[in-house]
Image (tube, rainbow, N blue to C red; front, side, top):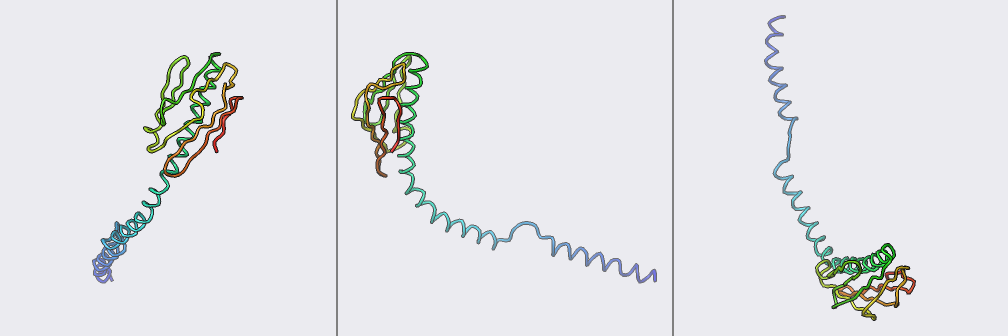
Length: 159
């Protein structure tokens, strides 16, 4: 009996090693990698043009929010500092804010292809947060246009 048990040990350990090698595969085969690469390639071919098509809309929305934010920031600083802040539009893509310091924001550097126009060249925010005019600021690019409406009360909306 000792002999048969001793004789079976090498066979059992060889079988065990063979089973571990067969069932203990780690990593991916070349075929699996090629399939995954092909699927990613197809998805990228579909997704990239769609992403490029919506970028102008994202830029337009961002520029409108930037104009809104700059107006509200000038209003807030006028109230906080108890002084008058002046907002001007030197060209079709720049906003200049003059108060205790002068700040210029170029929309073209932030949002490529975006231009703006205003029916008022100058807006003044008083220390009470009100504006001297109620301008309509239009932001445009290839995706369309957005409008920032400022009321005399100093509140603004994007439409």
